[in-house]
Length: 127
Image 1 (spheres, rainbow, N blue to C red):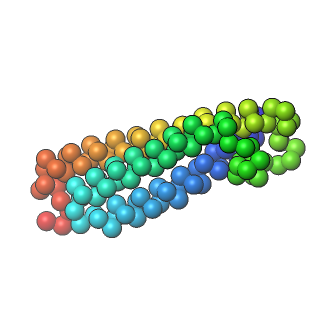
Image 2: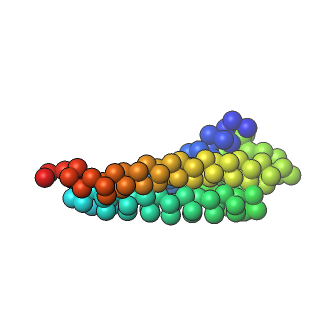
C-alpha cells in the first residue's frame, strides 16, 4: 500500500510541480507590480486547486489502467485486478485532495500578500 501511495505522490506531485513552476514564472514576471503579481498568483493557485479537486472527484471512477500511477507502479506492487479500481481510486482521490489543499493554502498566502500590497503601496520594491 505504501508503494501505491508513494507512486501517487510522485504522479500528482510532478504535475502539480510543473503547474507551480508556471505560476511562479508568471508571478515573477509581474514582480514590478507586487499587488498585481500577488493577485495573479492567488487566481492561478485557485484555478490549480479547482482542477485538482475536479480530478479528485473523477479519481474513483477513472479506469485505473489509464492512470500514470498504474504505469509508475512496479508489477509486484500492483494490487489484484478485483480490488485495483477501488484501491487506486481511493488513493488518487486522497492525493489529489491533498495537493488541492496545498494549492488553496498558497492562494490564501497570495491573497494576504495582495491585501498587504494593496493597503501599503509604498512597499513596492525598487521605489
